[in-house]
Amino acid sequence: MKQVLLAVGLLLACAVSTSAADWGSYGNARFGYWIDIPPGFSKVEASENGDGGISVSPDGDTELRIWGSHITEGEFLSEVGWRIDQDKAEGWEITYERKTRRWASWSGRRSERVMYERAIPLCRDQAAYFQIEYDRSDIERNGPVVERLVKSLRPNGECR
Image 1 (cartoon, rainbow, N blue to C red):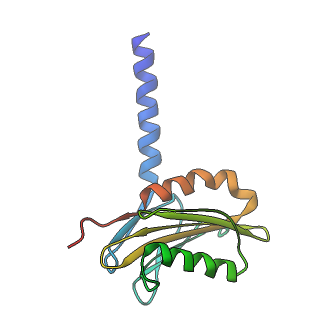
Image 2 (cartoon, one colour):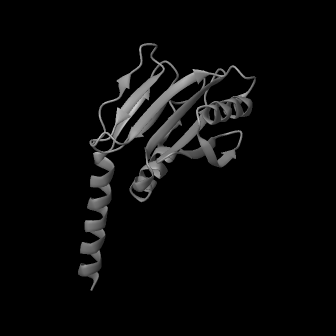
């Protein structure tokens, strides 16, 4: 019995490590943040100004936008409020919103598309964001992807 449990445990550990190994990562030196990139997604196409970039799923239906920015609306929570207002102005119906001093998340829908956005404050009045957009029919498939992205968006070390 111990051997069976050990074998099952080893198989699960291999599955988890393989799953984790399939994910890539993207680091941004300009703003000092990291995020994991889902398996099969394209290499992040960096923006000209070096704040982040875009990665796309193999089928082209899911787009992951990643960027850093300077906080221009006073402080982190005000900046997040402004960004949510910008999403609304672009036609997104915001269906979920949660803000804290350490992170903020919101999601919405527009026609047959779903969007989830996450923000974290960084050093020196800066913030990092990701936004993932996909078809409503892919909500279940992308749920674990969003969870992993949320956990992986992080600062690149300590503030100096």
